[in-house]
Image (cartoon, rainbow, N blue to C red; front, side, top):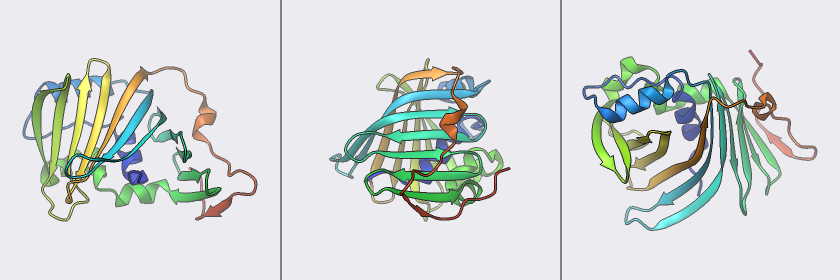
Length: 215
């Protein structure tokens, strides 16, 4: 099982603008702000792991991610069930190679419906999250964002930073399921091919959804 796509996309895109103005401050927040300052592009390899409440691994996938400020992203899962996700600023394209299916979702609608938008709307952050510095956890400075909404999709979000940038994200839902994304080989503000952030449905693929007009 893969993490709900739009939530991961929006959290990553929001790292360009996030400024965690909460009741607590400390080294994790400072490291996050340092990483996002002057951040124009970001690329990394990732491992995504879904764990049950008792810590059992339910699913593990690998891939690579590219981001371009302010709103473009390419997220590629490799392995047995390859999948490509492209956010081009107007639409989110999800291509399941095994099913030969392309799903299109307006990017603005995904943003509006995501509880993670409060990470960029800092005026709402304190209303819906309690931010806590957790100190050094496995060599990372850890910041916890705990939802104050009992009906929120994710009860807690964790961001782990070190001197190279954001190394880990984790989300926990009300059932104790935890999704962790660990990043390796991070590159900040490296030249990125603009074509990575455009998508054309392969010939013969089924297309679900309607493309929103480009800005």
